[in-house]
Image 1 (tube, rainbow, N blue to C red):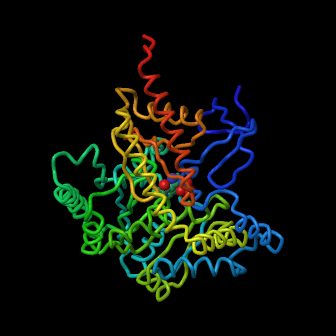
Image 2 (image 1 turned 120 degrees about the vertical axis):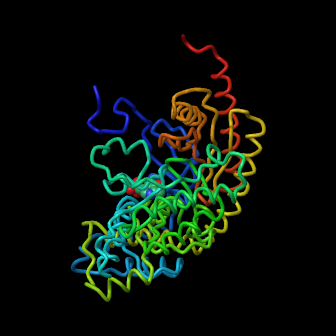
Length: 434
Ligand code: PMP
């Protein structure tokens, strides 16, 4: 028998969450968990922040919904203004999820070319091992295991190399590795001739590869290849953005200026489904001086309630210096993970950037994904939630607590992780059933 509520694994019955505060979550049995991955790398500012809770209540009492075809609202205007100020982009299109932000990014790219009389530019390219969302366009662009759900109709978008040092670096220097990736990308891009609309890339890999970074110079080189080919460069910063890797956008650290950026997760920080697509002046001008109309829209996009929530999150980020604090806390977390890796041979690699970190585990021949699922459930028994990257390529768990985690809480996280690793090592030593 299954329950009426459908979840990914039909037979699974996860604990019921009833309360959360800061980095902590409680279930209905009274068990407490440390949210070591911010859900799905979402809760940048931690749970139940009083400023956001008050802002939601105040906005709910005023007006929650009015369609943007008829009305604008002050919160949406202010969120867009703040996002543009923080990132240097010219316009922000509000949506309700990361997938919608990616879909919109792809549509903006198509429209940019149409407005300039280049409607034949309809091809997108993305990394072979990336993840961009669960809607048809975004999933088409993904090399994640979920792609199987739409394999019969998915577009062949994932064709570019992906930075995956553990598996691909070999004996090469970082420069040689980046150059080899760029040579491959150049050939794939050249094959599209004048049909390439845009390249869509995660600056730091998340759901599929688990906090993997590209070799230094690759993203800058790829941006240059796009410019030479007359195509746009779209950065999917749904997971890496909003301070997660130490700066508002991860691209800043590579001195890369995308034409379009998709943002999500940390923008709503788990308080509301809200995301955004940011477009550069070049893209906005082409549309404004062309048809002046964006042929898109979702019923709930930019509504006063989710916009006020995002605004309150942005206020907390600014007023409490969250990104800077997160940068400092991330150094402590990384150091602690590296110390654990020296003690526990089951950890093959600690990787990532800022507070987007991952541990790659030795799967010892287990089917891909099994080792990390097993480890995540052991961690949960020890009161720690980590996010298994089960995209089909790696055996990594993502460690990405809220940016606001304190040093005491980091020590608690490390202690739980250490106990879970000891339990995992013990379980591995037990004889396996034949
Ligand atoms: N892009 C990236 C890089 C993501 O990590 C995700 C979510 N894991 C998405 C897009 C899709 O976001 P959402 O689940 O909010 O639709």
